[in-house]
Image 1 (tube, rainbow, N blue to C red):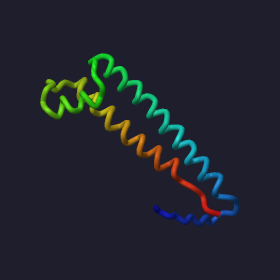
Image 2: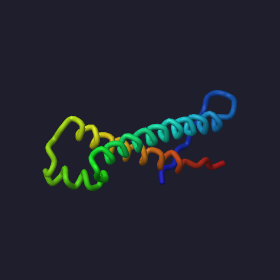
Image 3: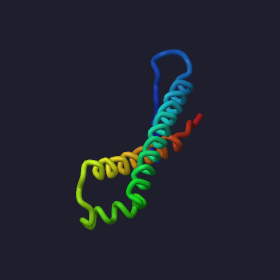
Image 4: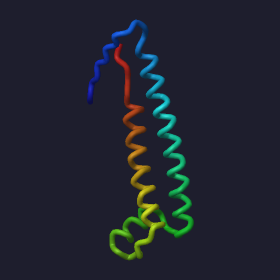
Length: 96
């Protein structure tokens, strides 16, 4: 667990600003997750395999490398990073 203390040199409540920023970051991140999941689903339907199957076959050099397959890998990695970010954002709590 990481603890963070913020000090503002201005009058007024800082917590609502931070909560709003975190909420907006979470909305934006979730939007990226939704787009990534849709793109990955399209790849899975197009190639008739799950992303897990694709990655295994790709790592075993069973597939010829193409720009489109590189895009699929990129989408998978981006989705993983966005999901990790969303988890971290959801885990923020304010201690009074």
